[in-house]
Image (cartoon, rainbow, N blue to C red; front, side, top):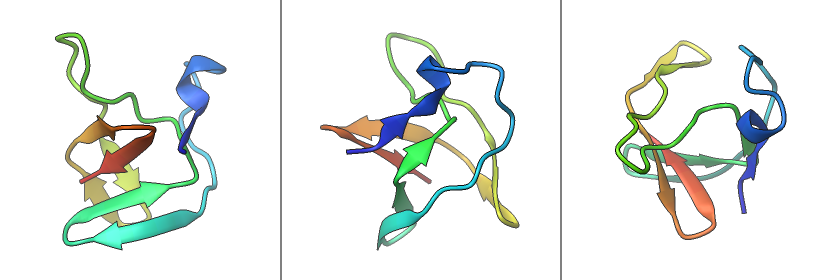
Length: 66
């Protein structure tokens, strides 16, 4: 399960986390500040390391980042 830190601190702009899985172009992280596409609201964009995050989305209890 991905811990959704954006609910605890919506103004946080950076954090450290651990990658828990990689599948094709998607990664799953232990915790995140990226809000996922939901309820008509677009997902957050940003970077992880030097890689651009194009979309965050929910998959069950996980949050996948592309």
